[in-house]
Image (cartoon, rainbow over all chains, first blue to last red; front, side, top):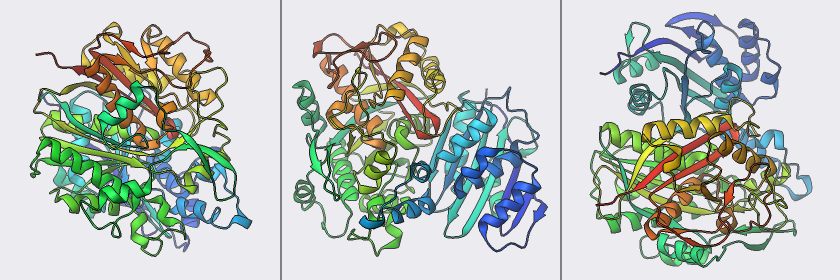
Length: 202
Length: 379
């Protein structure tokens, strides 16, 4: 018997604005990405020292996950994490590459190198919310609702998890975009490819 | 729900350009690891594929100037799968590309593709492979650190089982680059000598490069190996070090076994991750003790290929398949004296033994772990 699954909650972070379930909850006039993230961190009233060593991609993944999971009890839930984006970890990759381009100015840093993997943000969310669950990071030209719908459905229907934190988290050359959502048996918006596409585009 | 199988596979490594050639070398305990010099002059050990050999093979199927080294290796590997399987690509054929760093070497000013700023993007790598063969669906690029290759098997199995696709081609690849070498060196994780997984005197990783491909399908043939179950769970502990308790690996194996509907005792062989770092090998030993699997013969193949990053899980899955089909356990190259706190059963010499079921495991940065169970089909 197929479970009835829904998009329980969704949020987007782009153009210096945060909206949750379609409602604008925060906006700022900052120009730099890192300044905007700082404002968001303060707005969400988070106290988490590990946040400050993260790269921008992990910060964006972390902040969006805070918004989605803040009222959700993940302790009792097996919540999978399936994220995707376009630029993988290239923002940090370029920074790391610059540190090794010049033989006379060669300073590879392990603290930078570890963030040259896009799935590190999933690790950060897992640690923060103690999610010892199914996870994976995927890369597409743009948000692929067909892939997300099918994979999320598969994990839920095959009892690999009870809910899925999923979506798009991209950082590339001073531009950023996050669209995250939680799929579970709760909620009213049916989990369909069409609905995911529509929520992403609004 | 449909059963899923691996029916065709290919490996391109320093040991050869087919799975068969690679397996034969391993059965003779021949390693692909040798000494190289780095730009700065210091030497290092690695297993690398001869670039001239790649080009001379690639000349048969395309223009060597148009593709990066990784793309050429991936195209050669998938060509081999398509020729062997005679697969017709349809709307129900999926393509998964599993890689940690893709064309990362193109970020270097020394790369021929440096001015092509798009080339370092993973969707562009996906597009190159997709367009060459005319896949109808956008490539699914999976980039999940060192579990990428074996996690791709789990993803393909789920899609074929659910009927999203009738078959999925997985191609997994990563290259040895200055980017990777300098990174692992900065972590002080590189061994001065060829790596020695699970050994007392192990001193870290040997980085290697390879491409591996498989066809995952609902239609079995006489060479088919069934994918029984898969799990991939996070440690939720540390982003660059494995959990001391092996928590995520234990959960991954339990999830795979539950889906496979088999017991621990049904497993004839474990193809472990075994990177030869202190922490990783110890973590695996702890996990296998918790899982009651200390008796099961186990190896790490890193002593033959080095750690081929995203490719390793798929490459080692193919060797596991060949082991099942040949009823042969490959020795764990580089192993001498047990150097982990639990008495795991490391395979020390080539063993002929009837084999039916094997477990493949892998772990990586970001706290990720994956386990997949495979079974020989007996008609």
